[in-house]
Length: 119
Length: 111
Image (tube, rainbow over all chains, first blue to last red):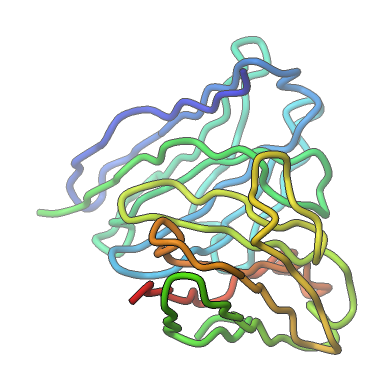
C-alpha cells in the first residue's frame, strides 16, 4: 500500500527554523517526484515545489524560491521542507504528494503537517 | 489571485448534475492536457479525481467526468450524492516558471 506519512504539527516562534518530513512507503521512492503544497487557513492550494529523490532534481515555484528548501534522503525514503527563519505568514497546512512524471498529477497525498508560527 | 479561475461555489440537489469550470490561458489549461481535479473534504488531504483532463483514477466513481474546451476545463458530477459535498480544485501545468498552478477552489454544496 502506497503511503506518505508526514511529521506532526509544529508550533514555532517567528525567526525560528523548522524542517518537516514526508516518508514514503509501499513504492519505489526514488522513481517518483515528491511535491509540496501549502494551504493557508481557510484558503486554497498553492504549489510550492517538487523534488525527484532519485537525483535530487528540485524545482521551485517563484513564489517560494528562496523562502523554503526542499530536500530528500533516499536512504530513508523521506522528503523534507525546511525554513531557516519562519514568519507568521508561514502559518499553514503543508501537504506532500507524489507524482510519476514532472508534468503530471499528484496521485497520493500525505495527511498534512500543520505549522503554526506565533509569538 | 489564483492563476486559474473557478467559481467560488456551486450547489445542487441529490441526483442532479453540476459542472465546475476552471478557466486559464493558452499558457496553461488551453495549451496542454495536464489538467487535474482534486476533491478535499474539511480537515482532509486532497484526493485526485481526474487527471490529464478526462481520466479517472481507479476507485473514483464514473459519476465524475472531466473535459476541456479552449482555455476552460470542466468537472462534471452527475447523480449528486451527499458525500460529494466538498471543495474542488483544478490544477494545470503552466509554461511559466511556476510550472504548475491551482485554481482558487469551488465549494460544492449538496442541498
